[in-house]
Image 1 (cartoon, rainbow, N blue to C red):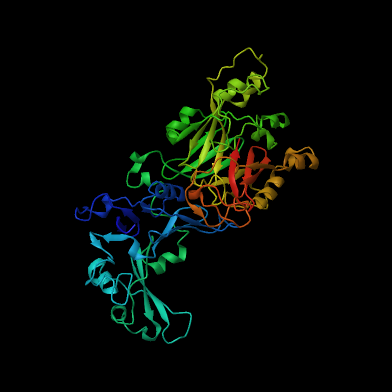
Image 2: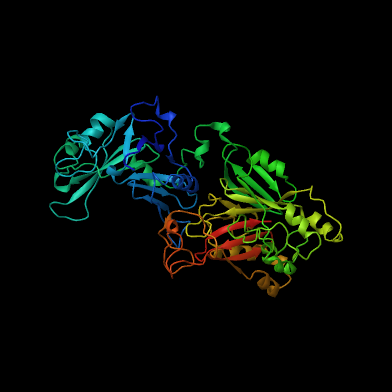
Length: 530
């Protein structure tokens, strides 16, 4: 809002000040930008939602057909700000101020624009300017810089205006300029100081020496900050190192590539909860799912001889794609409908470690060998639950338009054991499922007895996540719900109008040791490795 002072940090971001402008901050490094370049979409959106008095309206724009391949845009119309995130990694790449009247922006204790005052070079003129003039930016705000870039207008009309982009390291301003006044032989200071130039209409904050340089690889260059704002400027004291990439190597081996620390290996049925807490920090929450509505499918499990099952239903029976309360409607501690001996005790012992800020959840339960030996005991013999280990990992895609959007930050992964003679590169979290399925059918063809068994075990199972509870978000999704017919759901208002709300249906596809939750667009919403 216009009354909230916001500090500009060129090349880093913008952030709300915790003190008034009358109490100067010693350096810009003393302020951690609230909207920091490189921060994750999950982190930024969570912080915006936590301050509804400052950011009352949040619009999320994305491509329903290519939600991972194209940028995600957060519009803050009440603040005059637009944020652009890359699609694959969902990290903030560009901050744009589109309306200077809706935010009080300052740099080194100098305000950029005050629309309510008069008599200053930066203020509204008699012609109704709503942005800072060039003289204020040049003389009082940032100082001299190299020549910028002129973008001609699309029409040839006499009064047509082009745009002159004036760049500084990490920040740029766009000034409308009459096309008739433009001359490549005239210096930009005299051009932008003349009556042919209008006040700035927008400002951009980015990572790079100039906008001309930054725009060529805006969404591909290495971000300056970590994904988590809590780690900015704190070094190792800020918490456990964040995970850059998860590599699934098959046979229950998962390599977590970290930002600055050596890789962390998770060996399913071996890595202990203590190992996880030591390396990843304590979980953000612990969830025990006591909903056994899908336990009937356990009878269809087909073991592959290594403690894992090929059939997708074998992973659905314990709801291991359901890692929090969004899908559970039965929160009772016991369930007498569990038919296998020892399963009641196993249910009480098993739980999910929810790592929302890392982008994944880990099922903690007795290893497969313990469960098999437990099944041979009598119902009256209690099974020991002291031996617990990580047995499944669910990596979340945080796809805009999906039901669990913004519950976890996006987790990127690769399938290292998906390489073939024809395909040397591994499958990735950005690959559409049609391509994933085709490759994995080739990789795992020898694990099936015949084609009929392969088809039967790869039949999808539809999961509905849209009935009952709301995802709990408070932003408006402009791209529409995944299974709706072009409608949109305004979660800040609760339920949508009739005909607008999609059911949030997804499909589960299983391969040995892997289960994919797939949206209608073909994007993978979640990958479970077991």
